[in-house]
Length: 117
Image (cartoon, rainbow, N blue to C red; front, side):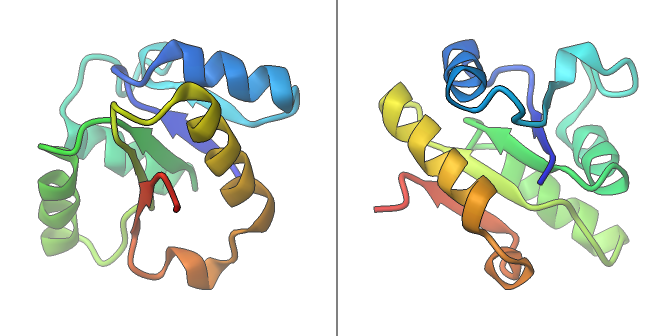
């Protein structure tokens, strides 16, 4: 599985993911010229084209951006919405669980909220 962390995603979570799983395939939006500083819809378009799951804390705008994209296109990258209140260790654990175990059917709804429990 490949991942894209949006620009406001906590760096501590990304560092934790890479510490626990050095081969974890994640890129940060700010490191991708096509989406750095762009709207959520551009980020979702790039993630969809790149077959990446989006990691975000942005509950307020990402769902509406996904709905906007789906109104224009038939597909959209899955989104994992991580509440700001989730402990870093729990976020890391849940994301790694998704990375290891999620199947195509698990992404059917298109949005997964963390924590999983």
